[in-house]
Image 1 (cartoon, rainbow, N blue to C red):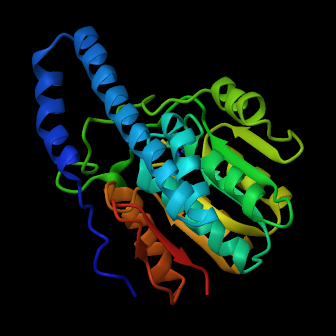
Image 2: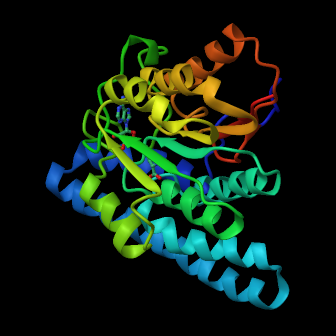
Length: 283
Ligand SMILES: C[S@@+](CC[C@H](N)C(=O)[O-])C[C@H]1O[C@@H](n2cnc3c(N)ncnc32)[C@H](O)[C@@H]1O
């Protein structure tokens, strides 16, 4: 079963960016375009962060402890994620749900980039949870691979603000190590950063992971969604949650999820995160 909000609903800023960014990319030299893109993107993120900073003070007076914690973590982690504020908020809500129901297992993300949503999973669990959970963060740490033919619909791979060539969405393992261990002071015994293509790493590491409480899929493409689903789903505890960040924006990711749910006759409801990402609970 699916709720009826699963299609990607870009915000007003997203709609404007979809017109302006491709125009700038076509008309400007690459270096100039990159400087302008980075400046616009960083200003947008800083603006959002100011909003969360103000919300934090609002919730300090009028909100409850969890609302305050959530906006504080979003404010702190926004600069490390490509997923944006709703992806972070959704990661927080999902962790809150598995912690409140005591669902057993590790936290796994496939598609980490600079580590923002992975850090949200880890931090919110260590603050809200009673027991420590082991975290597994898989990425090439070299950016995206090429899409395959299963990703294409009508000559396009998805609905993006800008094209995603091989190597894009790059976060290096050094950046993520710095974030996890130096900035956030997480314990090295609890966080595993696994470098390499999912095709090679996921089947090899899966037996070390054991039960999984949250599986967050953010690899954009068909293969990058299908491989972790095929390998990890049986390890997810009943009541555990699968998040698919790219369901509404990447055609191949949606296809991999729909095929998996259909072929495995999984009776569940897919919920929207409000911007194109979705999540469902394992029955
Ligand atoms: C959109 S980014 C992830 C964003 C991230 N979750 C965040 O919070 O910003 C997609 C990531 O998936 C990784 N990726 C995609 N397919 C992969 C594959 N087959 N093997 C390894 N990494 C892959 C890319 O390297 C990239 O870092």
